[in-house]
Image (cartoon, rainbow, N blue to C red):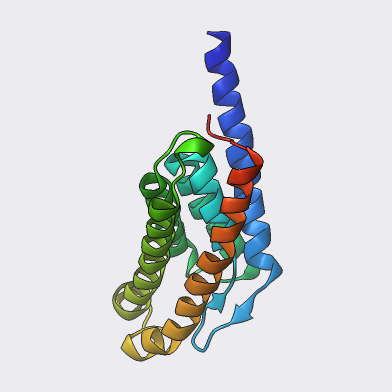
Length: 181
């Protein structure tokens, strides 16, 4: 029983710290995009969290941390979509990356997990800006034109985050560090 409580407590603490780190990484480098949103590199922390803490922590860190950053930075219209898109990005990465320990983190599935997760983020924001956002908010910040104009920024964000996260995760794996609970 005591061990189960310790595991839950560790999960809550590590996930909470990851939420804060995602929010900080998202807010630290903020490059405004053409139509309404901004490019950031919080995805790096989402990928790391998802791989080492798992899909549930990846979901919470990605969803809550990124949505908090949107709210704090004044991008409130994006916050609900960000919660879903970034939460699922973390979940997908954690699910596809597999292992429960550092020994189980294989490079092939890791690359696949990061690429698919980044592609989901790009697709998710494109669909939000193109379809959902244009239905909810009738202004020039949403619609097909806005989604297409913001697409390069989302692609850069996904590609740079993936390229930065992969060597970082592989380096952490070599150190023997493992946060899986």
